[in-house]
Image (tube, rainbow, N blue to C red; front, side):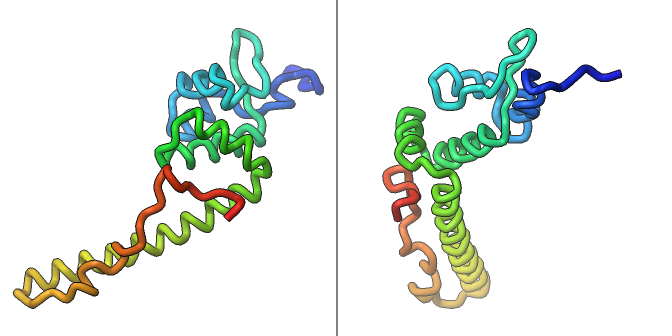
Amino acid sequence: MSASTGPDDPAAKAPHVITEVARSAGVSSRTLRHYEAVGLLPATAVGVGGLRRYDDRALVRLQRILLLRGLGLGLHDIARRLDDEGDDVVALTAHLTWLEHERDRLARQLAAVRTTVAHVEHGEPLMAGEAFAGFASTRLSAADPPSAGR
């Protein structure tokens, strides 16, 4: 017979154990504990033996952290941005829009490089407009990450 999962049971409040979250997110458990130590991602519950558990809200916060880390932001800047932006759905929607634009820009660059390779292989002259399609749009960086206010 299984143990009771009442309202005070950490598994009831936070069904995701640290190892599962770390593996799914592509980070180490040590990284998650570091994020907790610096106040960026507190565990939702800590069970027997110090096993950290997370709820869905913590998973959303971690996703936002990883998206901002991917832009090169430091942990201090990420903490400030998370505090400033507040609403997760609005912030993630802004990031989603940026990712879609970035995907489109990369698709243009892929096409441009394919065209360049084909021209070079066949000894054909290059057209500047074709060779640099997708390069004119500067890639968004940590200096200007997507935010809910844009």
